[in-house]
Amino acid sequence: MDKFILQQLKRIPFQLWVLAIADAFLNISAAMIFTISGPFMKEILRSSSFAIGILEGLVELMSWSLRLISGIVSDYFKNRKGLMILGYITIILSRPILALATNTFTAFVGRSLDRVGKGIQASPRDAFVADISPSGSRGTYFGLRHSLGMVGSIIGSFAVFYLIRITQYNYRLIFWISFIPALLALLFLILTVQEVKKPETRSLKISLNLKELLVLGKEYWFIILISFFFMLCRSSEVFITLRALELGMAIKIVPIIMITYNFSEVIISYPIGKLSDFIGRPLCIAIATIFLSISNFLIGNAKGDGIIFLGVLLWGMQRGIGHSVFLSWIADKALPHLRATAYGAFYLISGLALFLANLSTGIIINHQGYRTLYIGHAVLGILPLISLLLFVRRGRLEKKN
Image 1 (cartoon, rainbow, N blue to C red):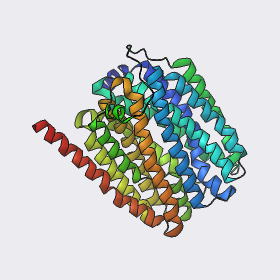
Image 2: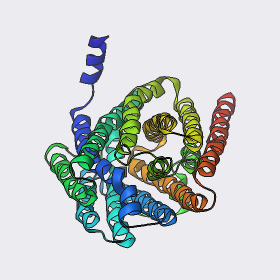
Image 3: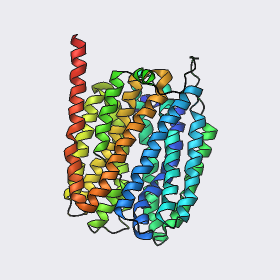
């Protein structure tokens, strides 16, 4: 078994390993920011749940919208690395602004830059992975990259857990420290990742008319519909930390929430990606949807820390499955010269769903509370399941015909 695993790992391209390492450094910084951003805005800046909901929704929509633009630009200029570098630089610039934030607006600017940078580099990065992935191993490659990258999130969460204690809840200092791994990520990306050479194709016009969108195909757009419904069932993880605080969890324990769901995400991403190469993408997304609904139900009905952590464990698993499988599924259906554009459209529409989810989250919490929010999201899980069934049924009918 060990020899088999070793042989499988030797087949992984060097460029995938180095990209994953750069991703891991960036995720260390991102986890440090994300773990404390909710408590920082709530306790230090005195932001309301409604304001946090709008902020999280807007920055996510901004981030996911830019993924379409960067995807189109990446395909047009046939360049992945340059846009990834630009995204990393933008992320680095956000750290000092967050550290110096004195009100919700300044925090919004810092969070916006962070998510803008994330958005710029996402589509070119995913297209880069698709470019170097064989068609029968895309789930494996995307799952492995995601698992290795998420190791950085676990390290970052542990770092926050430790830093909160030794700095006596000095959130601003932690924001400054998060600058270091982000800078290391940029240096590693510049020095080790090499642009993939692709066969020459005719240049594409940067345009979004209906004709060009239809080139992506009906199956692709059905996948996008499924992802839209899937994302509607999720709100920002910031609200999980705030739910835990509402139930009386000590602030020093909150970083363990990030550690828990990042750990479960790491554990499942590579195996599920590899499994999806054999049993198919739709079944794996159905599993993710079920995990998401159960997680929402548990978090909504939690009475103490134990149930919260069980819900968080399943939350991380659905994230890992969804990320690895959706990205490899899109790589299966997108034309090679439109891969980054395909990822950009996927992120834009998923971002719209997340924006609606986060916007409604802030409103529901203010009027009905966390329980209603998470139970409602659990029930919404029926939508992606129905769309998955329709997709499978459509595929079977086409095969018969």
